[in-house]
Length: 201
Image (cartoon, rainbow, N blue to C red):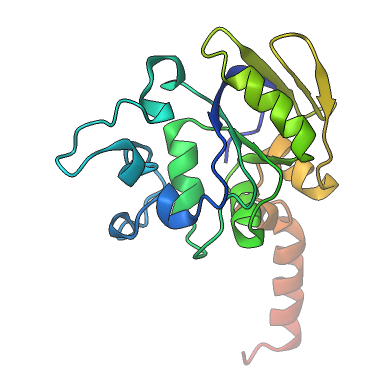
């Protein structure tokens, strides 16, 4: 997993509430176990019509938001089934941060494990960021994980809270495998001692 670095990016406004994981990546795309290649199907049923043509008025199809790296969304983002393909699709599209009043628990944890920063804020601050995102590609937000601040295109700074362990994992690029490998020396020592104590195993 790549280390999360502070960045400035375009934010796409998605004020809809209860955006569930089937909306994020529909069930027909869950056959793969690869983490790459799902970005093209992100929000598939909202982005494309029945013939596969882009729906022009969907936010990520608009020219100013095609390269969005941030989503500002309504409450309960990521509800529904616990498919890890949802954060895979978000990250593969290029989204690095989602900001909302609330998230579904399983989606929340899966996203951090896949290198996506999720920020929970009160609705009044979401409203400020939503309005800023509606300005389009010329309005870039700055996400600073070090200082835990969001800076709007107008220079307004909004602080956010993030779990210290999740922050550490993002900054160091550590998923569950990476966390395990960070302790490989201790694991090797334990296994050697265990083998010496129980050679018959």
